[in-house]
Length: 138
Image (tube, rainbow, N blue to C red; front, top):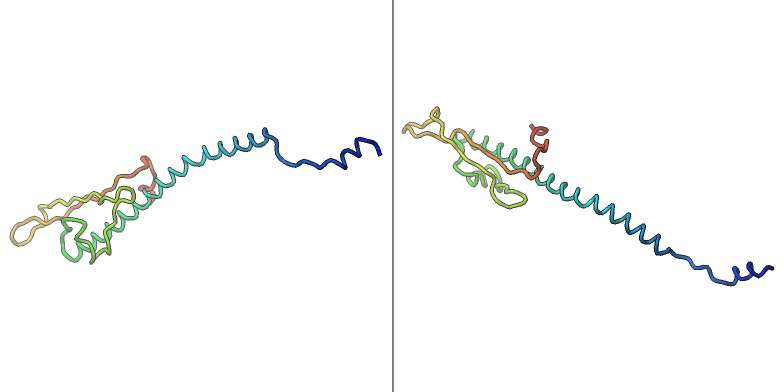
């Protein structure tokens, strides 16, 4: 046998990656992480906005039930609990109450002439501006 073939057979084969190959793989992983991580933050905000829309719809339904029973809207959202809602939902990020304000209407009054809360404004601050959540979910 020739000497070169003999030395190949006798020397153990070293298997592994070179430093350049490892650096290329680390660079590719770094690029993927740089692309994916900002999108995850956006997905969390979109999820919280979806929950806000769902909460507002549930509160609107409870307000309609309250109005049906009392012929006026409650002065605060806490009046809905526990009869109309087990718990009144809060903002998923801040934990604060949703914006709620009632207005008296001169068209609705009781026998004493006091005006009853007949109009309300309910709202939440969305995190993603220009989101189509509100237009898609009518």
